[in-house]
Image 1 (tube, one colour):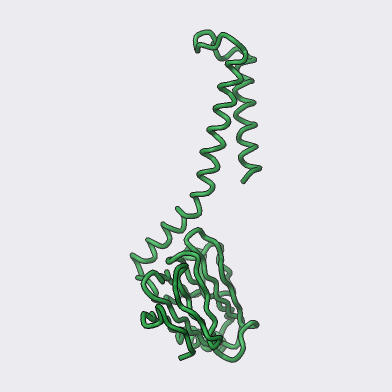
Image 2: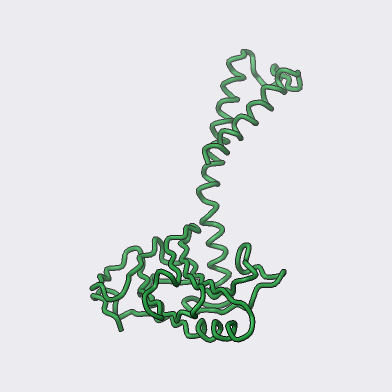
Length: 218
């Protein structure tokens, strides 16, 4: 971020001073009687440019995710897992998808209640990634990190009062809404059928009764 800001300031200053040196700007007509006036307005312009640039860099991730969440909610609802087919050249639901993976995902919303996530391991590579409303990947886990044959965790909001007893992992999201994405490695034939059957056993359950309670595995 800082490097981009410095580069933008340098380019702007170079262009402005270059125009002055080449005589493209009539300083008298612009009200600049002293050389100090030139540098003052160049400095002010550079500062304002840096502020606008920095504000845009900070806001851009939120704008991108806001559009994605709004689009996903409108098309598919929230807390409702969707299983996508194997990517093709036209596949655009995931940025830079891998041809060896299939994807399942949804918009999550834990503003009203925690969300219990349960998924069956397919016997091949599987991972779960959770993204906040600023595009940050705040949680990730894959099949090698999971004991047993099922993944189970409870996703709670940033201000949730839920406390755990250690029987089920709890993940606190930094925002009430975001994106959930499962990735599965798949080849062809019987393995593909096995993976497809496993991912369709994924269950997302809203748990309003757990809003203020100690959590135990169910």
